[in-house]
Image (cartoon, rainbow, N blue to C red; front, side, top):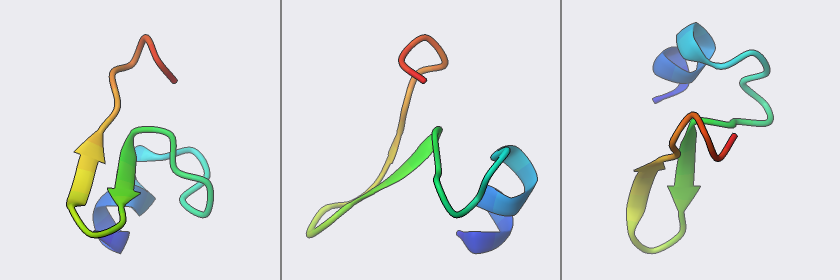
Length: 34
């Protein structure tokens, strides 16, 4: 997941598109929400 974030996020330390939901997994945020 870190490699994916590094490729698509502007700041991989503060993700805008791929979010981690604790206890569930990962969630993709819509471009309109970012």
